[in-house]
Amino acid sequence: MSSVSAELWTALGAAVSIFLSRLGSCYATANAGLFAMRNHAQLGLKSFIPIIVSGVLAIYGLIIGVLLAFKIDDESVISEEKAFHYFGAGWTVGTACLCSGIGIGLFLKEYTKMVVQDPVHDSDTGGALREPLISPQQTSTVFSSALDMTKGYNLIALTCVLVFLEAIGLYGLIVSLFLIGK
Image 1 (cartoon, rainbow, N blue to C red):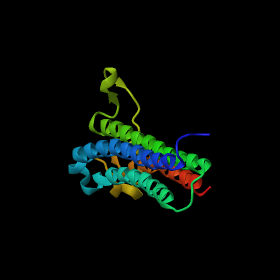
Image 2: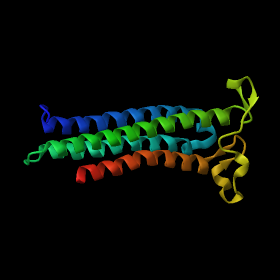
Image 3: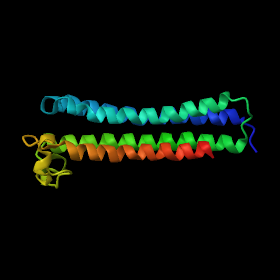
Image 4: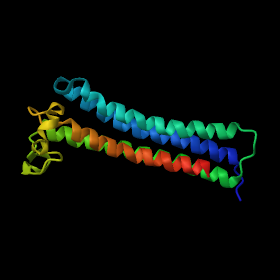
């Protein structure tokens, strides 16, 4: 079927999972770092939540990369079908983490624009009115400690959005584990 060895496909799966998940994590972490630097005075250590969430994406790719590296070290021969499953597993978690990291980065850019600038006027469209992504008026008094009303930070909504965006990478990890176990 293919002249390339099965071990090479497995190794490429490991490399792709690590590379793409790191790329997504780097993009998200860079934007999360800018978010933390800009908002540390208002949020304190809570401004580092996005950095932690972004770093987990890299761990997902590392898990699959290590599992695939152990498959290469086994004494048993890897069939071509299994090798393509392993490559697909690496590709799946890598692209899921890349997309998740890009989503986190883009969200943090827009969230910072919304909070730093006037949340009703958009400077990109010449001052036209726009609706904010997360309105500070939609919060409950029960969670008032997580909301800084002076600048419009809603940490509960911010954390929920980050968790949902990171779930894309987690879904990729789960699918990859199924592909490896198949």
